[in-house]
Length: 418
Image (cartoon, rainbow, N blue to C red; front, side):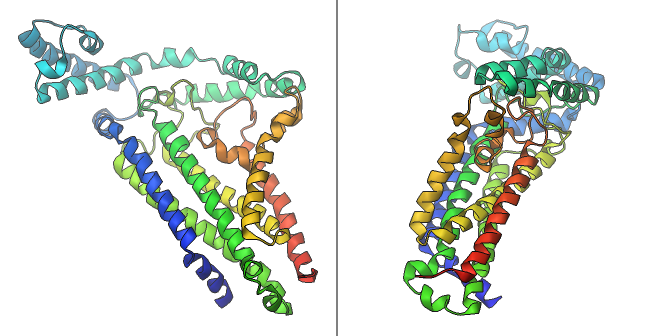
């Protein structure tokens, strides 16, 4: 235990690791600040959800209609007294270019306009949500993805063989009304992209960089300082390699936890989701240019938890990968740059196969592709074609890398240190 703590202490005292961690946290705060202009809108949406509930049904629509008509009447009273005009809806008001709203109306009136416009948006979209949902054909969307990626031949046939699963999931979402829930509209505020693409990708890349640096630093500490002959000369010294591996794993998980806890705490303190934790992630309001329909019936908080767990598993995989590199490369800097090259090779491997080959599809089953596409984790996509894409990728790579680590552990005990 003392040795393990000593190895972890090396990282804690490393100015480079500490500086990068602080820098990355600062960058995450900047991302939050840069998008904070939507925070007031999200608070208003939470108030709307608190008032009417999140489940869209006849009773809710009736209440929304009554309140919307009353609110629109107040708006028209104000506009009629100021500019002698009345409007059928809020779009008509905001489209009127004959005057500039901030110059004609008070802050209190503008706030009423904004609240009415928000109610207008959610009422009308909720009113027509079923026909909007039914207008989406998952098979046509999948065929469009095949066309975009230029997939044909056996690869396309493999994807088409899963179309029944696509349709079945679509019917399930319709039958259990997953799509009929209020949620921050992706088409307007893009909160799913902000959280699971911008923030998560930043957190994952930051954690990846620190994981490689930390692992290489711990595993090659003695080689970098020329004390390896003394440290590894005994039988116990050779077992130190395994202690270093455990220390790397613990440290990387700890750093990931620090980044996630601080960054997500800051994110959710700015962007309120208090009324939406238990709303299905497949809510149709979460549809923008594309609809994020999950393979399973997951609430927002369940989806977030699954994404965080997957992030931890990816960091474990990249720790294993770096440990294997550090076994054969006895320089921390070379390990880091070799890892970057390997990362790039794994990323482009998919392009080495023709788009008609099944190997082209299997080429995306890598932790590299996972870490770069956090926005569509557990989501229905033609190119991944299976609901178990993330599970298959993690398990397959974990088994492969664990076997490599076991081999490296045994080989290090007998290797020539010179």
